Length: 504
Ligand SMILES: [Zn+2]
Image 1: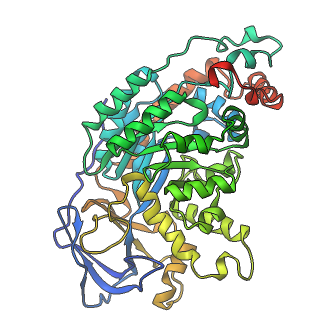
Image 2 (image 1 turned 135 degrees about the horizontal axis):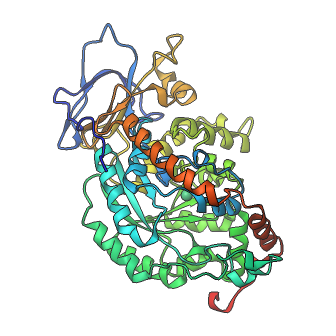
């Protein structure tokens, strides 16, 4: 396949002149008229410049970070898959068209880059389980070509592929189980050793902007030996772990039934809870569980739009804030308007949190919440990708990852400089992103990727998806009402709460 490239990412020897620098938005005062330069991927000390009379409000701030995503070049809605409750929606994903991993990821990463996202955790959904390594190599190439920092979470799964329980239980929920050959069918399952070997192989591709993480997909989808082995490997190697956790109420119920000691207690016993762990969602945590996660320094990704669209619940935002926990913001491939606009996502989380703790003496009244929102967008999510690397701030010696936005569209009146952080978080959207620099290289210029041509990538991907959708729709409906009714019966009868001998 012809992979379209338009230009190479470039460094900028003279640096970047900006009208305002928000080195640590919400914390430090804005600096006027600065020049930012880099050396070997690190920031030099910003230099004061003479005011630019033509300045159109170019504002620099640290690059945004997406704490949890799946790198979908084509949103699921575009593949004809309607949103719905997670457990039903997952069944619909089975008809997602198979498209080349490189194209899919390159489109997704380019879309993120043009929204100002300089770092992302990519939780890989395999399209062909037997080709995971090849798919991962395609994603690594896409990350390199677009130029943003990508942490590739290698998926470990295989349990409870159809529902949170054995196929034999699910079969009882159908009047004619024989109509559903997937029940009890032999499915490909990667062994733990094969998964670990892929991590080791992929680690050879690690670079300053590409890294590998263990990605047990979620406790209901992996066995305990896998969790315990990954926990031990993470301890000995320092490699991060990224996992979905308590996304839905049904997952909470499954865990309560299968872990009488408490699943979070179990995680702690096997050494999984540490600052190396990111848990995505956490909508159904209990207070004492949050206490333990806070004690162990676990990082949480809040994925508000995804929780709204997949009818999952609320991110545990007020509990995170009460405990001063580190958290990031994740788009989960399900941003509110399918546009990867993490600025709007931050706004959404802020609004939800302020509504949950409203009024006088509420969140918005304390004056501390704005900096915390910026910290999540710029630092917390970044930590989920690269760990603590001193980034998420524009200062000498920090990794050279920053974004330059234009404020001419959103500034109808001159506002006091001190009011700028509040105004940006209220009005800025992805269309205002002008430049993204990652590792000292210009990844986005004038709002467009420099390393790849997004329009060409999208055109090629659209053709691939169009062909695949024609083939799929010919023999398989996206919404199989009978199958979905069976799934609903399974959960209504509480089958996911029944412990089975092999799962105890
Ligand atoms: Zn996810």
